[in-house]
Length: 494
Ligand SMILES: Cc1cc2nc3c(=O)[nH]c(=O)nc-3n(C[C@H](O)[C@H](O)[C@H](O)COP(=O)(O)OP(=O)(O)OC[C@H]3O[C@@H](n4cnc5c(N)ncnc54)[C@H](O)[C@@H]3O)c2cc1C
Image (cartoon, rainbow, N blue to C red; front, side):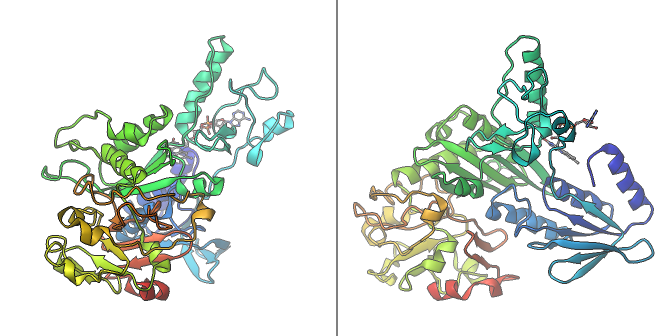
């Protein structure tokens, strides 16, 4: 177990003593950081995670780039797998039995499978306990015995977004709670502040961060929400060193920001911290679009990713933008035309099954190649080129296609079904383009069932993976690795 500095000393002694193979149980923050540290020391590391993704604090599609980073660094990642037994295998070796029937041999095993409030003393003292044995406190951090205060990992907090009980074992909230409790003790007010669970981790060269509530939790809480994904550069693309940033923004149908997640090599921390501040201040997506953020080329863009996120979200809410996600292909109209608007070279290096290619630069001249009466799903690598700039050039051809997608998961997700289509798809061509994928739509017509693509998915040209993990299916196309993982239903639909 890894909890204290002396625990780290034990680990270091094991490595110095010749440990060469490690099994880490749990791919949360501590498991990931430990995997990185042990790989840096040259160990063969196997990371075993019960969930179907690494970093369960993030939504699955956002955690994917961390998984890829681990694989690139040589970590063996075993998802959807648990350790069922640990046995002495002789010579200081431990055999870890896994739930899939396999076995991994290790010189050290690190358990990083989550934390539980240690409240046995409080329980013995008769203090009231809440979820998972956490200490119940009031807004001034007082327990059920008012002269006893509770702060930190041991207490139950209120989720600032869902309003439900939560356990957030992080140092920031613990430290602020300590100050608030002391203030109250000395008669200076002292109230606990809302907890957003803002957190960040670096895994080799990639950083992942989150604030507010993720889509999994919003679905579980039945909170209506939309999501947009963006893939802008960390700073102005023409300035050296710009790196892709993957940003997901979650918000209510009224535009209130509910959460955000980001991954990338650079600039993740400041975007998540700005959005954390925006959530705390009760800002809307339109407010995000209008934030006056610092810009010069080494640091950002004239339209910062945070501004862009607000613009894309605003476009979605006004109906300017319609989105679809790769998982939608599983439910797509078999007549749908899947249009890849990337370059011919990109198309040749890998594409969704059944897609036809018309590079966006040729779309205007080649509109006649698109059957006029069939639903149309447009995609590119990041959403930049599939954002409907083509309809601006030829609005009647593309903008009149009905939408192909029928997605039956709205009720389950708590995502509201849009009522009517505002009919402005394509009008704001070329603006705020860094979204994942777009679908053209009938101007002024009645909204098809799923015309607003609330949870479209990550499509990254950089790793050539198109990924959808919406709880119903996983669709991944990678010319090097993943082609055989495309579900047959998706291939048929496409
Ligand atoms: C490896 C690791 C890495 C982490 N990294 C981060 C990070 O990067 N960012 C982040 O936000 N959070 C991080 N955390 C979480 C963070 O450390 C905790 O959220 C934070 O320390 C909680 O503070 P606390 O005061 O509630 O508990 P602790 O820091 O655990 O302090 C509780 C103290 O009480 C003592 N104690 C317990 N029982 C008794 C008793 N009966 N009598 C007297 N003393 C007692 C314990 O020995 C301990 O010293 C990390 C945690 C770990 C284990």
